[in-house]
Amino acid sequence: MKQRILVTGGTGFIGSRLVERWWQQGHDVTVLTRRPHWAQERWSGMVNTASDLAQLEGQYDRLVNLAGEGIADARWSDSRKATLRRSRIQLTEQLVDWAQATDQHFSLVLTGSAVGFYGGFAGGDSRQLVTEDSLSGSDFSATLCRDWELAAEPLADLSKRSVILRTGLVLGPNGGMLQRMWLPFQLGLGGVIGSGQQMLSWIHLRDYCRAIDHICDSDLHGAVNMTAPIPVTNRDFTKVLGKVLHRPTLFPMPSFVAKLAFGEMSELLLQGQQALPAQLQKSGFRYEYDDLGRALEDIVSVW
Ligand SMILES: NC(=O)c1ccc[n+]([C@@H]2O[C@H](COP(=O)([O-])OP(=O)(O)OC[C@H]3O[C@@H](n4cnc5c(N)ncnc54)[C@H](OP(=O)(O)O)[C@@H]3O)[C@@H](O)[C@H]2O)c1
Image (tube, rainbow, N blue to C red; front, side):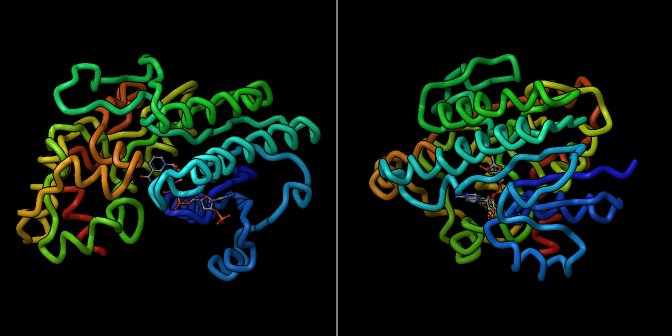
C-alpha cells in the first residue's frame, strides 16, 4: 500500500538509497533537509522536500529519523561532541514536538542509532559479543546513541510500531567509511590498525535497505542490530579489502599513532563490537551478503 514517508537524513549515504528505493516502489516520500534545492535537483522533483518542520502538512504513515553530523568527520573536541549530539538529539526532540503538536499517528517509526550503543571493546574482550539484549556502554559513542534513542522514545507512543536501527559499519560504493579507506588502500598504504583484534560489525548497503523493507513488512519492534551475521576482526577486514583490491596491506597503524592522529575519536578505530543481528535472523531475514569478501567484491565491481 502506498505510504506517506518522512525521512530525515534522506540526502545521506544510507538515506538517499532508501529514498530512491521507496520512491521507486511508488511511495510518497518527503525529505527533511537543510539542502532542499539540491535534493529537488537530485531527484528531479520526484521527492518532496522541506527545510523546516513547519512546512510539513497532513499525516505521515512512516517516520525515518537518520539525520546527524558525521561521527568521523572531525576530531572530537568538546564543541564537535556538542555538535554531534545536537544534530541528533535536538533534531529528534524537535520531531517529537512537531509530531505531538500535529497529532501524528504513524504506523511505523524507524529511529537511527548505531552498534556503538554497546560501547567499544578492545580485541580479546569477551564482552565484544553483543545482541539487542546487551546493555549500553559508557564511552562517548555509546552515550550519544543511548541519548539519541531516549530522545526518540516519545515517538513510539505516537506509532503502532517503533524500531531502533542499531547500525553497524555500512559498506557500499561511493560513501561511508569505505570511501575514507579507499584511497590509502588503492595506493597500497592500507594496514592493520592497533592490535587488529578489535571486531568490526559490517553490513552491505543493499542488505541494509533490504533489511529495512523486511522490518517494514514484519512485526519486529524495539532494537534491531543492522549488521551482517559474521563480524570480522580489523585484521581480517584489512586482509580481505587488500585482496579484493589486489593491493598489499603492509602499513600498520600502531595504537599510539591512531591516538595521536585522531585523539579520542581513535576509539572508533581501535575498539569495536561483535554485534549479532539476533532479531533479523530470528525473524527470517535472508542476507544476500553474509560473506565480507563477496560483499567487497560486489562493491568494488560498481565503484
Ligand atoms: N554509514 C554508516 O556506516 C553508519 C553506521 C552507524 C550509524 N550510522 C548512522 O546512520 C545515520 C545515516 O548515516 P549516513 O552514513 O547515511 O550519514 P551521512 O551520509 O553523513 O548523512 C547524514 C545526513 O544527516 C543530515 N545532517 C547532517 N548534519 C546535520 C545537522 N547538523 N542537522 C540536521 N541534519 C544533519 C544530512 O542531511 P542534510 O545535509 O540534507 O540536511 C545528511 O543527509 C547517521 O546518523 C549515522 O550516524 C551510519
